Length: 132
Image 1: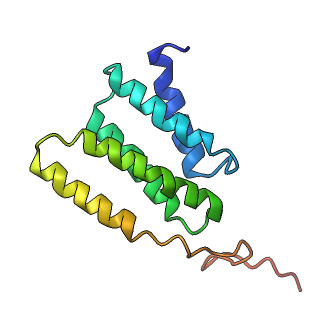
Image 2: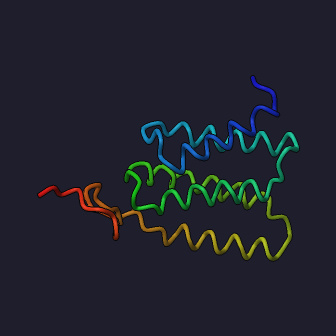
């Protein structure tokens, strides 16, 4: 097992791989990311609330991104529930944290996974690939 100090750069790299869907056929990346975050919190390297919020934001933003593969977005949405539970565990009795939890629960409930852009659809302002 690697040292706790080596975990943070790996955790950050996993977040990039998840957000950019660099390996969308490897859902274990998300489980590894969440596990590593938990390990960093337990070892005192990262605060629990902000780490859980960062993980939830990453998964929700990734799930909502219509440019990413549909199955990756669905996988991220599935794991967002686990991240939300972790955030809840760190809420304590602070009212502002419970208000934020209500926001995240609502956002997760309203998440639209059906909107995706076709790969061949050009972004507005992008140069055309059509050749005369």
